[in-house]
Length: 337
Ligand code: UDP
Image (cartoon, rainbow, N blue to C red):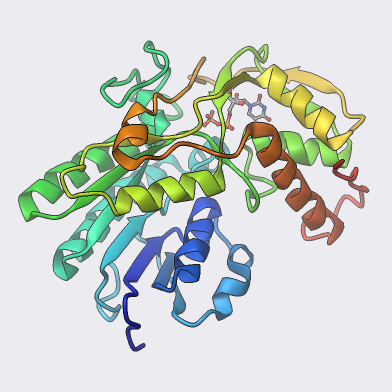
């Protein structure tokens, strides 16, 4: 494809996933040529919607545990977002998850070196594990169980951070590492298993909302549009900013309060039930985003209730079109305004 004036050629691995698809959409809208690389393990073509037909967009079915195909265009930028991110999905095949983190980083780094591309590695707040420091600044080294059920993801991402840092320094690449805190929004999978999608789907279906543990654990939820904006700013930041940067919304909420908020916004008659807390489930999580504020001039703009409302509307539309609800035949509860 001919390169347009001012546009860049950008690879997004995991581009058919939840965050990746929003990223592709934003990059295409800005006039860039985007090559989405995905093996549809947790992503889907449906996530890409109208972007699939956009000029300058192409989609490649590829597993980044294998080297990237030779015949791809020369990339200016590579966003490495390919990895299952929900505990349910990343624990389904833990060895695979660890290898996606390790080999995916290696293969995208090698391509960045070949092309002279910038690389942005999607890391995670999970590198902090069950944190003893609260809120978590980038300087905190974390408290991760290296052999627990979350380790394939936590340690996989920690290793990816190491590899990106060392490979970037040795090869003289401009590399970026974003530590993504809990992110939510339209296009989360119905069976994603994470708390926001679970609560919303349960509320819309009139099913019990499942709180794990006593519901006093906290998370801080960032709307996906805010996260994408932060990633774009990080990719465009000066090469000297090569160390990890937290992106997330510092407004912290307990799972009990989140459940009540979803019930209120959906107007659902669902009840709340309590289920066992998963092993190694972090007690608290909240980003310190001072670095993003000062170096990227970024901070979240979408309040939780507004973001939840948009997410609920999106799930309600999908439920009504029976994209995934046909089997149960349940009637979704309409999202309230
Ligand atoms: N959680 C819950 N009910 C659910 C799913 C998750 O109470 O149906 C809890 C989970 O135990 C954790 C929090 O919600 O304490 C966030 O879980 P999630 O899987 O969304 O993200 P992560 O644990 O990776 O931050």
